[in-house]
Image (cartoon, rainbow over all chains, first blue to last red; front, side, top):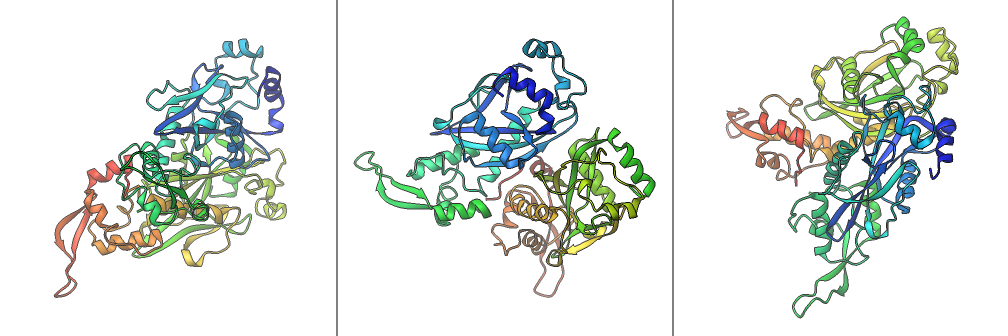
Length: 259
Length: 259
């Protein structure tokens, strides 16, 4: 939604193309060399920072809707997106019925009809993504005044139940680290073991023992040695590794257990 | 729903108390000494075996709805239920619009109105539970002709997308084994290491090494030795273990990583 015109069309006729009371909320994390950030948008209506979100089209699978919404906010296609939890408790405030009517009128010139199709308790399916922060292009839309990255230790207060959703995404990622291959698109094509260990440490939030990561990844064939070494100094020239595409695609489909 | 009268009331006035187009589907597994089964109900309307399911009341949290639905089918309260995935792709057939109208009329005497509140694509939030099969009391309702346990290797064809939901539940359980304490209510109060290892093997579907399970559970303090031993024979008297309640409740809340 890029203009007031788009938004009015969505309010009046959105029920023809979108499912009622169902949104996708995306916890999009950006990684760059030891640093993890999360993408937030500042809502003009509730004037708080929120996770990027959107409604689901009638013809879309949930995964497709999550991909579209993430693409709209980051300009990145073909992201590893994972559904992690659905939030639907009463009173979450995700309905326009909970909006400040004055701010809404000021923004749109519309007095929201109590029978509008957007009214009522809304269910949100949460997806997470971890992307290379250097290639993302955060983008605002008509309903947001800003869209930008926040370091995980400098988070603002979030609107709705988005703090809960964000924390849940982080918990699930800490678990998924042991079961899904993560990192292929977050590291250069060739990388040192120190670089991938750092990635896993940032995502897990703790210091990891080298026998778990990345050595476990090597033992299952997911990481393979290349012939190249990085030249750091006379006595330090760590070997470059890369992902094995075949094993990567296999464990992406089937999962793995890194224990 | 126990009678035709209940069902008619639900069809005509259910929208007053229930959320539209939202169900909970429960993959309820029953365990008993090395044997895992799943609870299925035979739908009178689609005449196929299905996972137990139900609509969500407007005032309920999703977890509360899952507890209620599981209780209605098993008579067991206070079950460890875990949300694992939401299913909402178009064409899942979970709407009465996809029902066979003749069977529906034969069963209820009702010609379903195309504008009925139950119509339209329905989203299902999946929960799993693992319970002690010996204490469960499977129960039919007006819409089901049977409700019973099936061994995992003798599953019938399931209705809707319930085969996908069941397989997804099993995949997630295999992952959760490493991150949540499982088994407290599935074993006697005191048990041998062999008994708990068997439980983990049945749930994971593979032979486990004793240094992972159950020794890891002992090393984190979740399992503690008792003074008692089982008397099997002159040279075999394995020690009984039990769960440490404090650690159990802590890891139930916070999760753990068994690596």
